[in-house]
Image (cartoon, rainbow over all chains, first blue to last red; front, side, top):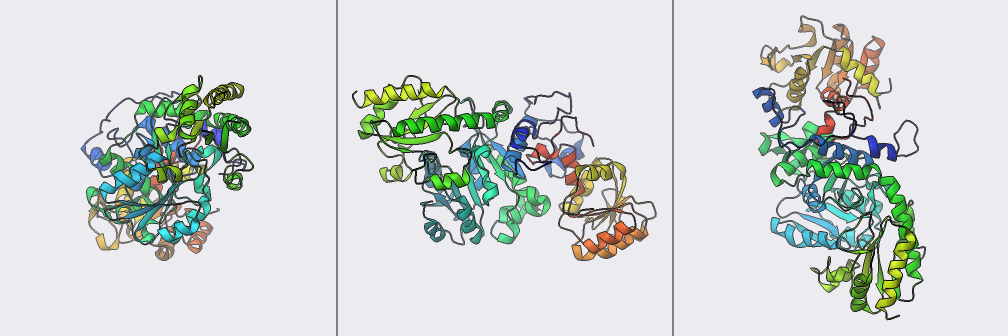
Length: 433
Length: 159
């Protein structure tokens, strides 16, 4: 999307309007919450058409719901995608995104610097499905090249990673994935489509935890899978669930029948139907409220984060700050390329004094909240090594930017001076001043 | 007409004025895309007449199948080409001959020379689109399935 192109709606317009025409039944201007499990059929033939996917319409809210659909179309529009599938959480978005691509014995390549919960999901739980995740350092594109092979069904990365402040060169990674005839999937949770649209850099599929900046107020768990519609599942020759006949739909071929909508149709008609991680209409509605103000909020999140990062950099109790928005940061050049509006609001810093000092800082703050989330209107703080990343080995913790001295911040929308003051007093107490 | 990108109003006007569609390549096999499209369009009030030489004389969805466009004994508003691009030329010539007002080629089907002949004969032409998808998109149904319709509007749906 080119925000300034004449005749094309801008990002803020899409944030408010995409997917949400007035309600066809009542004319209601705000999106109604359709709290219903199911929908009546006109007759048996209509029901048959719906079950055969021959007509548009609603059957059962595990598969689709009018309120959830508004959020799906909204997020597809914001990412510049063809279609979207909302899910119960960011984790289930990752499951639903990979499910059409993977079979037992298949492999996918994933960044070793992903959010720790993703590393556990991919490396431990998905192994039980016979899906093999190969982790690779996203700073080393030669390593990524060596990791892909003909059994590789996807390459998966964050562009702006949680918690390390790492920025990944997704344009280069997309080329490697495409050379191996597989799609690049980007978790865009930390950047949001306001700061970065991975599909414009060659990614094929985007996933989000909508729990974070998209809903924005720390109220609602959710996720979404957005497809560009550009990947040729037939030509790649290794995606039988999308290009071949589907036994569960009497031999229907999703890619032939629905074309560039085939992946999104499959995510609903097979993924949500049979795995079941559906977003609730109420969750979708709250998330829609957040998305309407995404642009305004992200500007402030980034400005506050920049202020806090610059303050920490000058603090005597701080060993280092890893925020890609700082000019000396090793990822600053990539941040300027991919994230020109701001390097996000989640980053880490190291406290002098290691593990014990890190624990003292998170226990010494008053206004910042010590909890395991990011992307809230409130500023949040956590010590990953003792919480979100404790399931990992120490080697994995360090690789993920979550070593023993690391404190992670998610900077909120409060007055910047108050965030700075709270961190200042907690740091001074932690190092004994 | 620029056939790389159609204004919504152009497509909307065609779908609003057309009532009888001859679908060349309509399949009697219920899980083929053409069968899906025919059934959907019937449900929206269009009369769809199937054309398929290998199924001539049979019925698809209650409509008699004809071997060619020229065999259809009644007036046809629009010819929908559900055949490969290389077969679109003669179908376009038949569409002109029977006095159709619109020549529509399905998703993946495009023949610029055939389109030019049809336009010179006064037909409106759409290529590389599906009328089922376009109807659903403009009628705000496509979004029900999470698809980005590209429509921004503060009006209730219009088709």
